[in-house]
Image (cartoon, rainbow, N blue to C red; front, side):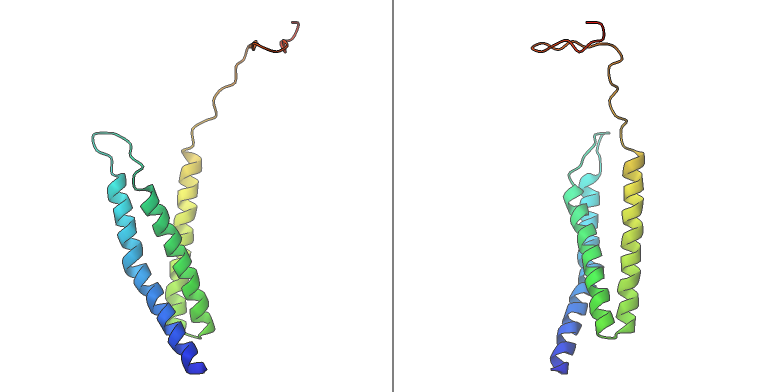
Length: 125
């Protein structure tokens, strides 16, 4: 029983390592290349690739940490732990960037606006 657990944990750790070192950077580069704007136009074509690379990077890192911790493999636990921390740092930076660059809410009208088909909500009207 212990030998099967070692084989399965080794297989999971190997797949997560290959995914983090090959698949995630490939998806990131695909998304970056697709999002590159030409002639000043804005393009969001690579957002799907970037989203997948983020989710796979964070997910495989978490799976790797859990499997390595239960299998008592310190080297893998450190590697995947560092990957989790990097994923969290990138997620926080992206979140702060999106909050800071969010467009302001549209201004509300400062005068009375009458709407057809209903009562008049204007003061004094």
